[in-house]
Image (cartoon, rainbow, N blue to C red; front, side, top):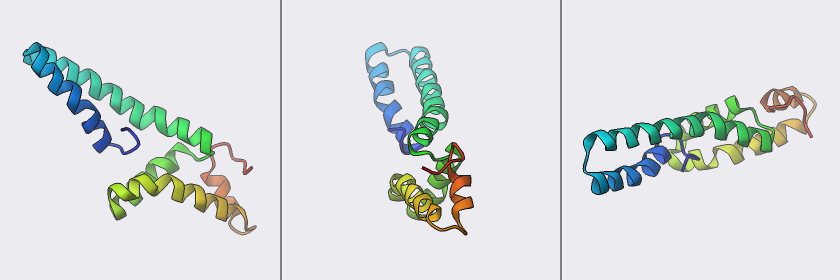
Amino acid sequence: MNYIPYIGSVVAVAFPVVLSILQFGSPGLTGLVLTGLMGAQVIVGNVVEPRITGTSLNLSPVIIVLALSVWGSIWGVTGMILSVPIMVMGMIVLAQFPRTKALAILMSQSGEIK
């Protein structure tokens, strides 16, 4: 669910928190579950996954987060889902032309175009 920041985290955390309320009935313990799960979701969704995705696709994590923001604001959830493939295609196209190859290199994580 972390592929879509914020919305995915809320959906992924909502079910365990509701289950915690039903199972324990304690607001303090439910708050602890909510805090722990949200903390883990924020770290994984905003730090770990963009880095892993960027490494496997040779896209900079900054470009991935910016693409999620831009395409998400343009097309909403659909834009967030399509943002990484759009950026990969854009980098591939930019790498094919001598004038725009520098932009593709800036978008890449390693500074190399393969």
